[in-house]
Image (cartoon, rainbow, N blue to C red):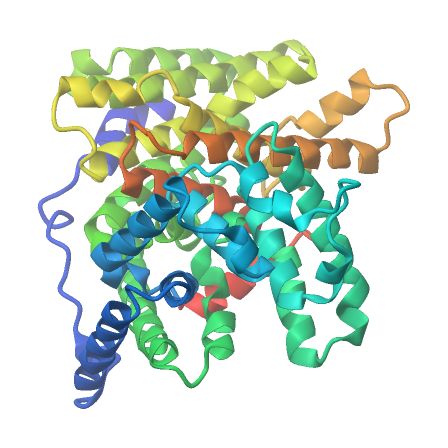
Length: 505
C-alpha cells in the first residue's frame, strides 16, 4: 500500500504544477466597495507623509515604528523604517543618545525594536541607569504601567548571559501582576495581553485586532483595519485553492486514518510568510508541510517495520526513479525518513530511549528542517551554490526553532484524535530519569528549556547575519506560531488557535 503512492504523489506534492505556479489575482471587489480603494491609498500616503515629517524628531519616529509593527502594516514602509532604525542605532553607537533623558518606556521600546531588527545593543548599558546602588530596580518604576509593559517586552529579546534582562522580566512581571487589580478595565486588558503574549514570542497577526482598538481613531488604525480585511479575503481565497489541491491529490482517500487538515496546515505558511505579497510562496510551502504530517502518520499508524524500511530506502534512491530534487531538499527528506524509522524501530523493539537520545532524534522528526530549507529556496535566498551552503547541516536558527517545536509538542497531549499511534514525549522520558519528579515539575523544567532556547534564537537573529531578513523573520514567525498549535487546555482543545483562526478568516 505504501509503495503504491510513494513516487507519484510525492512528486505531485513537491513539484509546482503549471496551474499552481500562476497565483490567482485577487478580486478586490470581494472586500472593497468602490470608495474603499481610494480611502485605502489615501491613508497609505498619509501615513507615509507622517513618517517623513517625524524623521528628525527625537522620539516620535521610533514610537511610530512600534505602532506600524503592532498594526501589521510595517511592510508598506520598509525603506522608511530601515532609515529610521539605522539613524537611531548610529546615534546610540556614537554616544548621541542619553538614556537619562528618556523614560523607561522609550528606552525599553527602542531597545526591543532595534534588537528585533538585528541591531546589537548591550543590555547592561541600556538598563543600568534604572537601577539603584544596591542593584535593585528603582522603586518609582513600580507605578509606571506603560514603562513596565515595555520593559517586560524588551526582556524577551535577551540572549544568554544577560542577567539584567532576566531580572527585568521578573521585576516587571511581578509589578504588573501586583497592580492589575487597581487598573481600569482597558489598562488591565492591555497588561494581561502583554504578560500572556509578549510581542517577540507572539504572531503579530494574532494581536492585531487588539492593537487596532488601542490605536483607534488614528489614520494608522484605519489603514490597519482595511489591511486586515484585505488579508482575510486573501486567506479565504488561498484556503479554497489549497482545499482543491488537497482533494485532487487524493491522499486523504488512500490513507483514511491519516490526518486530513489542509486548513490547519495552511496556518503555518500563513503565519510564517505573513507578507501579503508572498501568496505563491505560501501555496508552495504548504505542500511539504502536508507531506510531513502524512509521512508521520504512515510511520506512526500504517506501516509495518519491514514496509517502513523499504519506504525509507525508496526515498534515499529518489534520484534513480527520475525524481531529482536539488541536493539540499533531498537531503532533508532523507534525514526526516531516517529519524522516523529510528522511532519505528524503538517502538517495534520496545526500546525506551533516554531523554537526550529522544530529543536529538525528535528535533529532526519535528520536520522543521524540511520546512525551513524549502522556505529558504522559496524566498529566493540562494542564487548559486555558494549562497546555498549556509542552509546545510541544520544551522543554529533552524535548530533552535526545531527544538522549540519539539518541546512544545511534547508538553501537550500529542495524540491526535482518531489515531492509535505511538508518539513519545520528552516530558515522560525526563520523569522516568528523575525519580520523584512530578508531571508539573517536568513541564516547568521544559518551559525553562524553551525560554533558554529562545535566548539562543534571539542571538542567532542578531547582525551580522548570513541569512536574509525575510528568512529570519519567517523562522521567528514559525517559532511564534508554535504555542498556538500545541498549547492544549484540559479539554484537549486549542483555544488560542481557535481565536487566531476566527480573527484571520
